[in-house]
Image 1 (tube, rainbow, N blue to C red):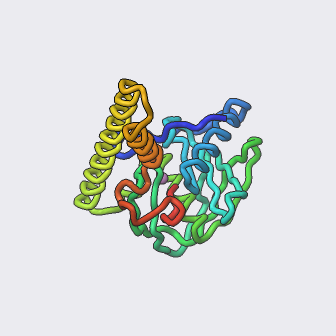
Image 2 (image 1 turned 90 degrees about the horizontal axis):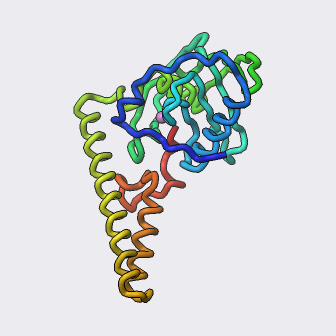
Length: 224
Ligand code: NI
């Protein structure tokens, strides 16, 4: 298994429309396992293949409290939907940003499971939200598309600022390491470098870079 890099808004590859999957084989199951590892590590409650730059109709999710109920949807289709709900959504491709989105309250989905067998699933609440959010990814759509153009522009700027800060921290940490190497001792510069590395490690994938120190990954709303 391997953790995969997650594309981030406004990467144009996130706009690619995913194609149906023809063969459910071991190669696909290996991708599914990697996607679960990536999703749980982020941490997130859902991940579409589009987010890891594989433009095929596949999504994985786990909305359970203890992250012990993995679900796989291959070639998902919504058979019907009804009602409306509003949920504060987050997205692993738009780290640290959360916004209310209106979606159907209940849906019925038909898909293939990891063995290639067809199933139908009735979903409501957060599961229904998550499936609809991930299916949007497969259509090249992001939850920020539901925001006003002004808000979307603000999100873009916030993410760019967070990336610049993360890059600057990484550079400081690298500089710190270089200083330590030059000095040949692990004095206070070593401590600074270690702190720099800790910050950088903490900032990746940086769910809190925008929210500042107010939130931790554990207390943030789930992202998908
Ligand atoms: Ni998402």
